[in-house]
Image 1 (cartoon, rainbow, N blue to C red):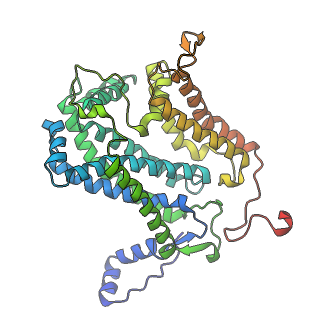
Image 2: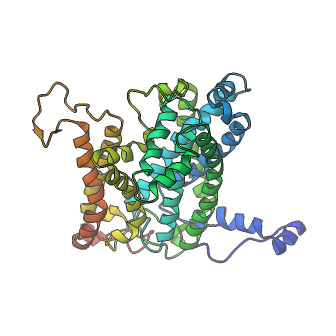
Image 3: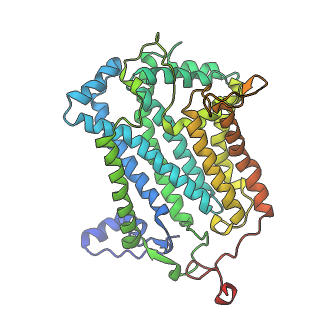
Amino acid sequence: MSGHSTYQPKTGFERWLDARLPIVRLGYDSFVDYPTPRNLNYWYTFGGILSLCLASQLITGIILAMHYNVGDAFNSVEHIMRDVNYGWLIRYMHSNGASMFFIAVYIHMFRGLYYGSYKAPREVLWLLGCVIYLLMMATAFMGYVLPWGQMSFHGAVVITNLFGALPIVGESITTWLWGGFAVDTATLNRFFSLHYLLPFMIAGVVILHVWALHVVGQNNPTGVDPKSKADTLPFTPYATVKDGFAMSIFLILFAFFVFYMPNALGHADNYIPANPLVTPSHIVPEWYFLPFYAILRAVPDKLMGVLAMFGAIACLFALPWLDTSKVRSMRYRPTMKVYFVFFAIACIVLGFCGAKLPDDQIIPHLTTFKLYDADLNSFVWLSRVASIYYFAFFVVIMPWVGLKETPLPVPDSIASPALSPAEKG
């Protein structure tokens, strides 16, 4: 928690403004004098990196919207790339910025999961982060449709049709998303409107997220709350310098993709104008949706697959109440740490399986046996195994291990060691 404000206005104008709108005081208390745990590592710099990504997406998105034409979407994107001054740079920053955004948010989420940042009193902080993630997914999907290439069009057809599997309301939701009875210009117009709106909603929830962070205080690798000034350091210069260095390294990675591999994270079929009569041989979403796409395909029934896909996200919202352990950080939970590693592997496997064709073979040219007419050598079966572990991790493993595990000794404070010299010897 930030505690009592130490801001002292130095000029007459600052005193006048502070008495009427203490915005300078707010900035000073939030980003200069705010006490942060002294043991934060570089995994905690991704909050600042995400703020940088959001700012980049907002600025480049507003500029692109000035030149985008829904009525001639594909050609307007080509116009941006070829005729607008530095349009190619702005477009590549925006398209690759989405991938950078998700890289950072996935690292941020796994860090929060590992160090127990979702546990009391930070439940609302975690829930707001999950809302941001959900809004990011909606924004990214709608943005992927806007170039109106082959993959954009047919991806929109596949994903919007999933809502039709929902009982009672499914057909109404699908018709509303389409703006008619098929994916066409009306759909694109709706997606463009929502894609422009949602980032500002994300920015609003981010403000709430930061506010909640400053109320309950920042977690740290030990999971122990600061108890004295010895446990904390001012945000500036310590955290700002660390965040600035991490942002610089991240920008180098970002620039590498923008200038040297701008289409590496996209799909070549999206450079072909949308044609409802020609379906691509393999319709795949963007890489950051692949784990959920694999879960969807792992379930034979369409409705159950859709429910499983949304259930995978719902598990994140329920996480603060699924973990029964009294110890926050997995640094002191050796058993849970092993399960966490397997969980990370399962997520990577799901992403890999999502990029494969359903009938692709894990080991090519291998003669396999069949069980209930399902080929056990297919990636669908591998995604089923990974999906089962994904849900078991949240619903079974976390509650059970939290009750049965014997954690390692946790330090009394951030500034003190976990074990005394006698205990170490």
